[in-house]
Length: 408
Image (cartoon, rainbow, N blue to C red; front, side, top):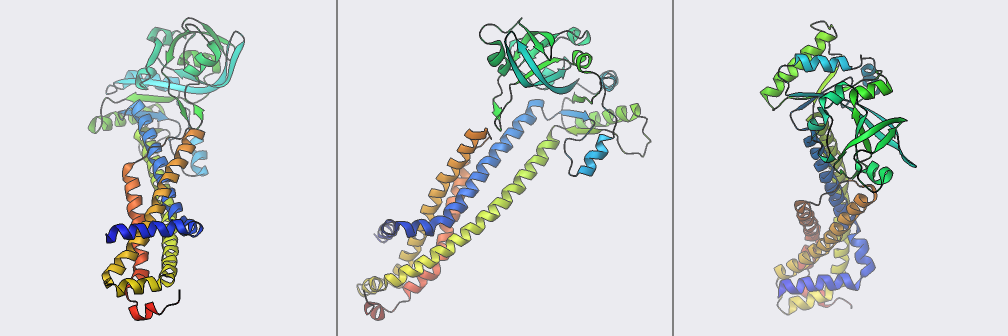
């Protein structure tokens, strides 16, 4: 009955002093809510990054003018001075790379898509080789992809995203319809599968055309990104990496000991960097949340000391009726742990709610992890126990005679 009674007394104390309870638990609530929100959003972001990396596959290598990641403006300016990666570089790799399973290239722009009286602006225009849809694992929901012949002969055909179908083409079969992309006509031959939104931005607002057509329309000035499917990881990836590096260095006539004038990255490069950044960000927020929990624990200890003073006569009566020192100690420890646990539960609900609101508002991915909830509740309860030791010890050490003399 001691445990049940202690829990009941703790809840009664919280309910009887609602404002004081809210202020007492505020630190614990903020700390737990911060941890749950950050962990939920971080795990969602990690899952999104992983899914995007898996879109191309772990065996895909990219060749570009600039690396996927850089830290300073000086690095950016130095990378900008490099030669562009050109269509001739792509053709050279296709013919010279014996270890490559498949090679593709792309260049991007933004433009306007028009069909009859409807149009959309700021649509992503993708110049793709015919090998890019398979390399990027794009599933064609309707119609078909490019053919090698269409790519070589700069055919005016297009694969579109569902935003163009829904907002521009409207009802009916989209295949065979003629759209104008920045004033140039293209026949729709395929529709890519829906990809949803990310950070409030649609991932389906795009049009893909053959790369040769893109270069003829928008000009050859501008750097391409070349994608190479190595066909495997480990030693296979190393062999392909070295072969690509040799081809690119040879084409640029670089000295044997000179630095590369291009960047070769694996699909996981950006993912690893972003994961480390998310982990560091999460660690900082968790540290700040830990400070909130410590402050909340100190507030709980202060309130428990006040509670001991207010209930001095009650403690004296319990001891006079036979309550042992350990009984009083356990009672107050359970009360402080219960208070912090309630704060932890409120914090968990608030944290998950905030994360879901952010996901709903800006389409930022989130993923609720059970382990984070359990750990947060455990830590919150531990904070209550730790900071409740001194008030509980002080209550247990009260002399029953002195306690009974206390004024009501």
